[in-house]
Image (cartoon, rainbow, N blue to C red; front, side, top):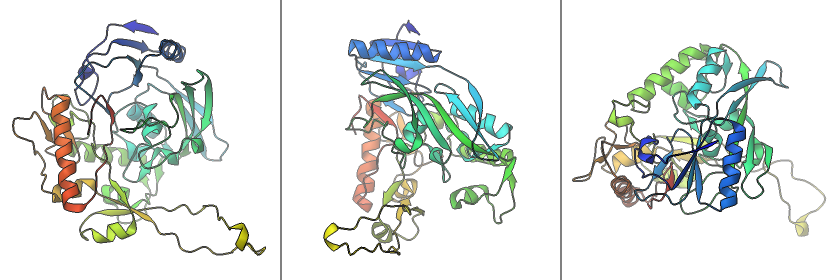
Length: 377
């Protein structure tokens, strides 16, 4: 590790907001990252780790603490206990899309729909990233992490991370602290060895324009996903202000089936699979020695399109408030962008306005997707 002169976070985050912190470390090795974290924790500093900066919304006031830049890289191929599969272990600072490109180039399936997502590998499980119906939790085996409370390093199975829709026990949600204060050092995924695959997910099939179940090459899937993301301003481009953001600023809303039925039928929606392995609990007072052999049909929650809700609330692509340098992307209603020199305050003002319009129109409160540091919504 090495302590470096603090850099303005506006230069290190894709939303381009944030002043320089009090202190900054840069770690290019796992040992250096561990040392930087342990030293920071021993000092009792406020802190956060910074990878690609693509999922951070940082406030205008200087961060009174330590920022640790994670620059560790590397991919190892490991045997899988499952026939026809392989495991990849990637260091936390490795670029996420670089990992996807590696997997696709070697004919390893399971990540291709998440092509083009910015950020680092270490951030992926924290957010449980996903796109077009594919999520990292489908292939994630385990992570190596270090806990703040003990300073100890351990390997934690994916099942222990509390992975849900764009969340985990490691995520810092606005207004609360993570259930587990820890930093990921490496990530291991288990992938199918197959140069082509049958695409089954509805969202992905729609995005790819597929109408049958003919296997398609992984490289073709990746190319189509990258083209789709580029058309929506979701691929980082220094010359395109529509990409100067955090991707989707708001999460698609997860609602009950009853709430979904109350929304206009035109609102795009997708079922969220219920837990088919849920434990059956029988009150002791009513137990007669028999375990029910059938369960009532599980009612699935529904994911509804936040972009559709925003547009139907009157917020069009390219919308901005008077005299503001922050605006909705001209390509995608779900992305808030910095058009050049926008402050965090300007971006937050726009986000709050959008939330209020959607709530007034549909009664739903959109939740921000990025991690907020020194910002209030």
